Image 1 (cartoon, rainbow, N blue to C red):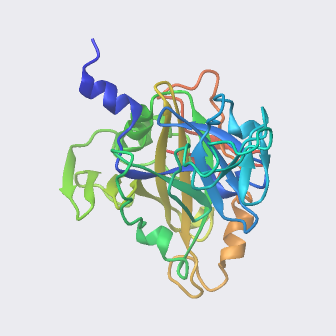
Image 2: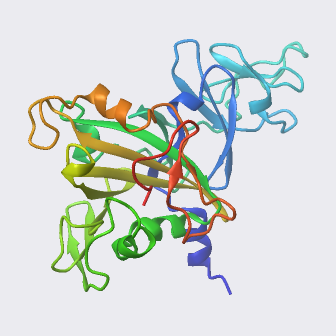
Length: 320
């Protein structure tokens, strides 16, 4: 029997920013999505800024995502009702002096765009003000690190996706054929280390050999951070970082976002003077502006959601 607490957890925690789409997925045409069980329409206005509204026309409940982008507003395809990015009805062209005009009839979402992704604020209450949004250093420090974003839809509740990434023990089993995770103990005690934003879950007595630790943090958004050691015989060597986030769609589906990160500062001990941000992106499959899909998607289960393939190339490492 599902308890009220479990029902709430299954839908997704609130009071957080969530990545909902990659930036490249939203151009001028409206895009309809479902996140945390809510139907949302996302589009860019005439200045290129992302707007997000409840995907519901206040007139007859039609999907606004099926309508037209008019630059500073979106028009419903059913009767042309025009709604601005703040949820205010601007015009009802089929009716003179319609009382809907000037009314804020549709819920709007706070939006931030960062690191190639679009983030929406999902408050505990409709009027809760958004928290400050910040990111782990490897993602935020663009002077010393370079990244590209992979995103995929997984057919499972988001809690399974979180548990999958937060489990360092599966590396030497599920990924034993990987050139980056083939070594290390197949048995280990696990320890929990508190941090300022959450905690680190790690193998006791083993570090820098495999996928040996994962950090869970909350800095306005919930994120996971880990590193996979690359041996020099497979390239420049050093740590390959991943920052991951998961957004619930509904009880049975979620969307994952993995930023793959390398230190690329010229002359650094990790990459060497010849390793640049451009070279990093080019030699790792040109994932920028692409969707990474789980290659074991028939069916996609919590145990099989790992090795990822982009629309054009194969990933250098699993999504973990």
